[in-house]
Image (cartoon, rainbow, N blue to C red; front, side):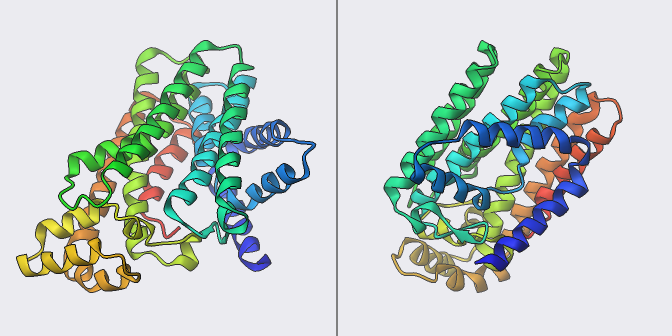
Amino acid sequence: MSEPVTQLSANRAQLLAEFFSPIAADLARAEQIFQEELQSDVPFIRELVDHLAHYRGKQLRPALLLLTARACGQVTPAHHTLAAVVEMIHTATLVHDDVLDGADLRRHVPTVHARWNNSASVLLGDLLFTHAFYLASTTGSAEACRLIGEATNRVCAGELQQIGERGNLALGEETYYSIIRGKTAELTACCCRLGAVFAGAEPQVVANLERYGLELGIAFQIADDVLDLVGLEKNVGKSLGTDLEQRKLTLPLIRLLKVAEPETAVVIRGVLASSENHKREKLAPMLARSDAVAYATQRAQRHAEHACEALACLPDSPCKEILHLLAQRVVHRSA
């Protein structure tokens, strides 16, 4: 167990050094708030919270909040608190997602439900949500609570919409985009809006940075859906093929069905509708012969470019450059 965790820590440290050095102290303060808020006298809760240290990723969402704040001119104590809040909300969604997907690995370590059980996972996610909303209230800002509440509502609605579309092999791109906008992009957009609002940015700058976060989140999710089909678990660090097992149609699969010859499409639908394992392996040759992966990757790249265009409202700065680089990196990644 220690080797993968060590590797993950090294990767996280590399990312922090490479991208997040201008906000390193801010991220450290947000992390301190995160840990202090989740302290408990209950041993089992402490054990679960300690497990989250390995479970969590690269802190992209709090980093977006803090980078946009710095790019707009200043980081305040409220930013540190809200950065901890969005990290709690995101972590809660991961814990719940792993139950929904039946995933056993996250960041190279067992998921909460795999190590303990679904009950612990559901309640830990709930605990994170409740702490997040309480912590947001300590800023004394009704707007912060409203923005975070709206984003969380949309995340849940996106997840429910996706569940409702399970097994729908006629799913179109418009519905797919509605799902990923809700379950992923609304939270990244909220992070950027919060960063700008609490830095005192002008309304047009706030709107542009919110658009940046939305486009970035869409690009990120499309790239994630590509990795679920063609990525390597040893690189990604989580269970792959879970969308297939849960009969969730994603953009590469929508494209694959659209361009496939009729007889091939019948085979693809049979694989997608079956309850058998190894769906990734069965679809791999058909994906390789099609433009489905390239098509989805190009769409992700387009949204990343739209994100970068939205940054034109900002003066040049190291944080603006990092936001540009992040948009490019989310598309071309192996983890």
